[in-house]
Image (cartoon, rainbow over the protein chains, first blue to last red):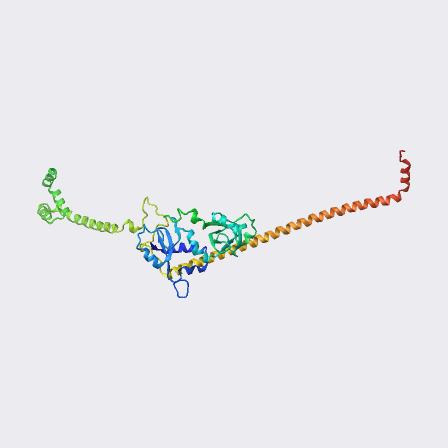
Length: 188
Length: 197
């Protein structure tokens, strides 16, 4: 377990920033009294996986052998062998509060999303204004519960003219993955 | 070994030259004793030998200077080795990773990334807006062309209808006109008409 180097940090933040707005800085904000942040949060790399956890726990985790350490804190994603960064499903709880582009789906569209299919225009109840195409988007249900994230297929202006069966968000991860990919999700 | 011994013993002139080339004092002394025998012949070789020594020394010095430069220092590309562009690391840089674990460093990186992303999104939006404007303009133009075409068609239709009406109107009027004027002819016609009982 080690801290990220400069290029790794940059790659990871670039990926996170495509889903979130400027409020992402709250993730690494220093602890201050009267705020929700009570202890310093850090990013740690184990093999190729990045975890987001309090510094206190990160320091404890150093006492566990690398082979025995399964997980610590929240897994954000992993670095590919080509040096790119892939967000994991478990990062949803971190990016959802800071999402830049949001998409709310109707109740009839929840199940298709949870089974891993893309979001159709007919399922969309609300949509962020001024959303460009091919930008990160977090999918919520009508009770504001995050269901997953993906990439917008069309901009807001273009989406209005589409037919109801057209895809508007390409799904990347959804909470259904916790069941579908249960066996492989956290294997190293 | 045997022929060398014989040559050294047999040829005094050769022996003198060999001793001189070796540069040993003992040999020169022995050569000197021999030189005293025939001065006129042996006087020439010593300066020649000195010259040879000087040349060799200079040459040696030059060679040593050349040997100072090695392949690594000349930055020559290694043969049969492909070095990808990304892999080549700059010289004189410290090995190992530089970790970013301090708050400020992370904040700076995040600020830079955010600014970059904002710029990208802004440019994307601008581009989308421009494209949308162009599309809107094209759509309006196409609509205008369509309405123009329809109007033209309507006008032609109206014209044709007008002509038809006029024709039919003229035909009626002709009939009306012709009916009273051609009273005789109608009478004639009546005469000609055949009626069945």
